[in-house]
Length: 297
Image 1 (cartoon, helix red, strand yellow):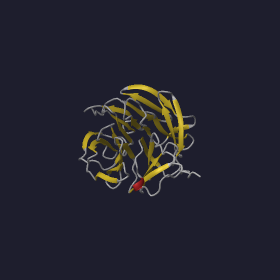
Image 2 (cartoon, rainbow, N blue to C red; image 1 turned 90 degrees about the vertical axis):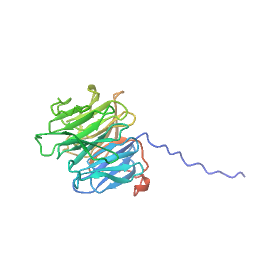
Image 3 (cartoon, rainbow, N blue to C red; image 1 turned 45 degrees about the vertical axis):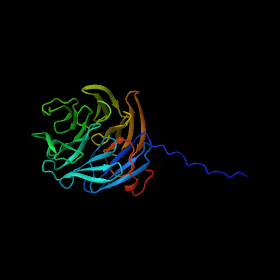
Image 4 (cartoon, rainbow, N blue to C red; image 1 turned 90 degrees about the horizontal axis):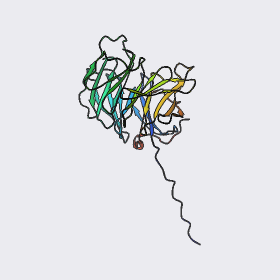
């Protein structure tokens, strides 16, 4: 009788994209999860403090804004290793968000206590102040920052309320906002598109300074927090929403195909408080993850 051969293991095809979700509270440690589009946990990295903002660095790392202990900018590389790029800079005491243009190594940092936009690099160079906001009406303003592929800086703030687009050396505080309300912002790393959230349930997609499309969250859903959103490598746009009848509530992640006018529900988030998320290619974090391939339910 012929010897039976063992069947080969099923081919493991990596997902087209994964989501990196930053979690934690203001006073405790944090964590960044890596999940597939169905919400399955592929790995995580523990943080000493919660990261309030994240940005994808090219296709092989994450940059984190950590406002605790005098302010830190941290990095998770493509193996899941955590390191500090710089900390306790006197001009940046409370970094709350970061933005990086596609294929760039320049990091734009938003600080909502020093009230500045500053730039550093993934090599950890000393931050350079790009713009200082004078006469803020709020002691601590909300700030969300993104950088487009042509190096324009997109800022959402409730200090001088609105969504602003700055280019080159023009960081004038008198520039008129493109949108009147504050909200989270995101930029597509592969095109000139960017997006901004507007309460209670709208997302505006721009290309340069031109409005491309106005998206609406599903019925009975509102923007989560000040607006968390991220473009995927394929150009789709992921947005976090919550139940409209709840002040905060557990977020649900949605994916918009802007070209086809289609929306797809991804999964609800039921773990620690979500502070930010970005979408990107999968990175191999197994060496630094205590346990992988775990469902979220």
